[in-house]
Length: 223
Image (cartoon, rainbow, N blue to C red; front, side):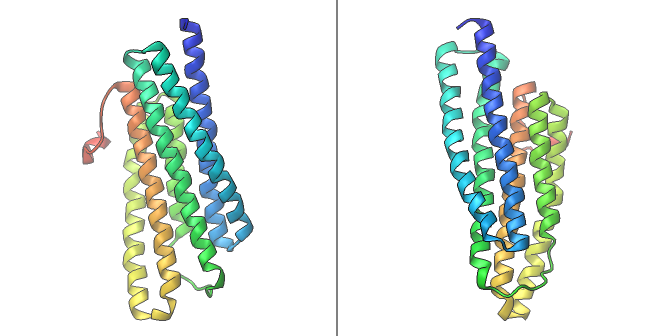
């Protein structure tokens, strides 16, 4: 494989991943809209797109492995391919989280609609923004933008903790609303996972660009 062809293969791999990532991000938006509107037709869209994401994940993994086998890249090219494989997995799990939210909406179909002490749309917006920024960092090979994503996770975690406390209190005080509160808790948990996957993507961008492993470093991620 010539260097030009090798670079074309890397570019194609990146493009495939970005197409898949765009679909996964759209999945989160659709899932939250289905939750807000209790619209099962949107759930159907989420289900169909989930199958496409799973197929693309397999294709991207195979393409990355083929490049590794044919070229045996070194240094930053090797880190890029390894990062793609890991980001690919996290993007697929973002799609899984959207599917989980969609599944909860189906369960809600016969539940009474009530006001709940949690701002799920805001949490979803924060988590989606993390994914978007992490992918932008990947597109631009921008380690500093990736580090900024790491610092955003605390806000999502804070909303999740507050939601858990408020919804648990609601279930204890008004047991008749426990199904709605439990469903909201599970949606929050899925969104918290989306933020975690965005964090993983950002860490993989840093690894690719700088060769630095910033996983499990706590506050050091923000330095």
